Image (tube, rainbow, N blue to C red; front, top):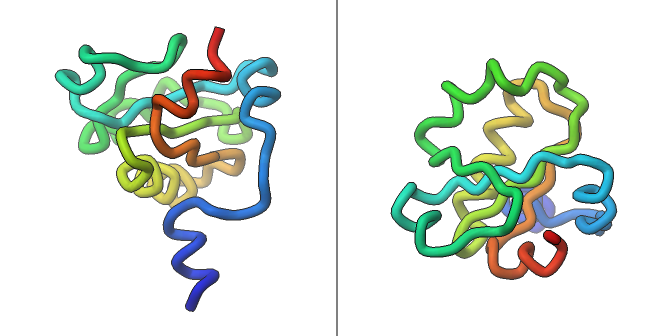
Length: 105
């Protein structure tokens, strides 16, 4: 039960987010356009959660590192699950964009 909750929230073995970004990970911020306009992690792409399906054609390599973020970590956890369900293998939930921002240059 606890592991299921951790999986849903994207909590698992620690990954080095900074290293993933340095190696070319795609950062996808799944907040609304208005939220994103109010501040976001440098280098991130804004794809609101309800529009992820339309972004899939741009993500041809299913092994490419993808980092999801949002305001609190809940929507980004949903985005991670969405990508995993579509066969993407290297997806990480970074949680709040403000925390992720420290890794973005």
